[in-house]
Length: 122
Image 1 (cartoon, helix red, strand yellow):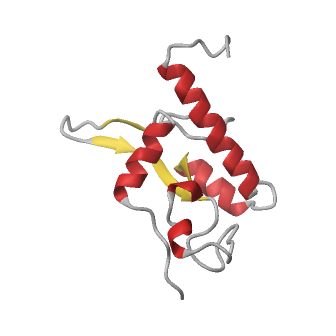
Image 2 (cartoon, rainbow, N blue to C red):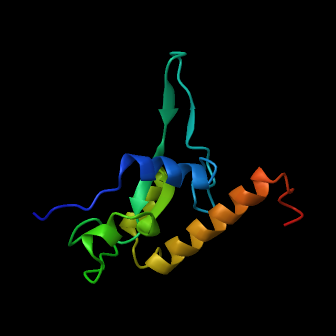
């Protein structure tokens, strides 16, 4: 089995923040982090998912991508665990273009929310 081109921890944190900690699937938009019963901990159900798989044979794998491109933010989308599984199990429906559109839309929504623009006004 080949190596996987993973994301850096700092990039994962940036990815989650760029979408306001919400799933990028426009039909979901679930909050992906919150409090744990232990006041010193938090729960996260979010995942930095690869748009093009991290290794050969994975969902939407693009062999033309370099290892650096495969592990970069441009190949990443923030999803809840449920949506991450969903997009990897139906690659015919959830193409790389669909996932890139989701990411763009989620970042635009987070920007509007950050600026205090009501979603109905957008």
